[in-house]
Image (cartoon, rainbow, N blue to C red; front, side, top):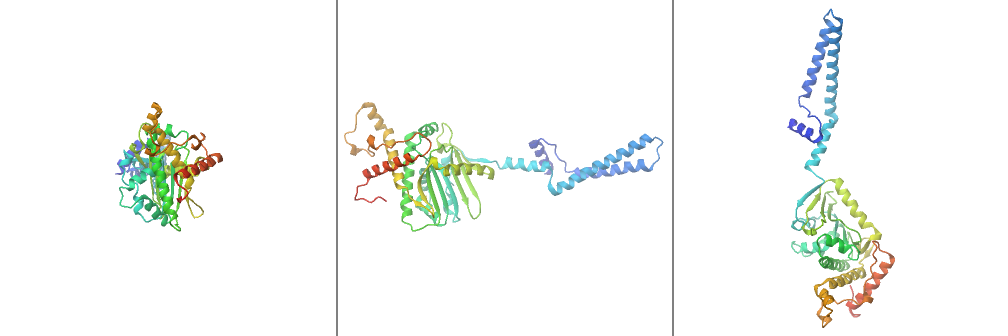
Length: 380
């Protein structure tokens, strides 16, 4: 076993294999040096040079043996450099930073094991329309719905952060097109995600107080990866899953990786925390913390209106109308009516949210909400 391990060290580090008989060689060298020195010291030789050579040779063996013995003693206490290098290489060979767990993200069935664990949990989800995927997943789980699962985690004091891709960002359609997703499909998925946010907001408003924290934001930045991080507070265990967005491959059909080491986990954690906390490139959708409870309903409805307009604009029927110049006989037959120019959401092509952006979004949301909800209806 030791000999095989030494050979692995030699191959991995470029060093010479260390023999398990090294201590025996050390003892033999010491004894040989003592014998040679003794012979040339106590036996009279007529040749003085020969006597000096013999004494020097014996002393050299003794010194070499003492050095090797010292190294062996230090190896017992602190380990040799080769041993340390071996352990480092072994960790990299058998526990890589990123380990692929499935070839197709959609096939992974253990995303939501956190729902069955009562330990207080620190959760962070990020992706283009990650809540759409979560809502679809929960239809296959033995729980009533995703909103109930989130509420139960908030009841036990868990913290949940969710980051979505802002559909009003100027680069969105370029990004999702490169990643083999049709813009209209992305807008529809995000529409479902925003409906999920609304359901969670309604459920939270019916609860007096919960110990946990929930923050959901839009992000005007390329997320690069889907991010699924579950940290169990009591045990300290971390389950971090990362899905890369590859050109030409739909996100749900790309491989899924697990971040295995603390170093690589820190890299991803730092990346997403910075994106989440960047005020100039994020927009709040729902904030539920002990110090702040903001359901941002006007902002959410404005985004829904923007998505409705985009979906309508990109629908096959709308494209056909633009090509033929014909309009439908009645607007009542359509699910989403086109907005007049005065109601269009003005989008700044910068990557940051300015005060004018926020005022425009608020004004637009009020206009659109007025068309959706008559005065006698209550807006929750």
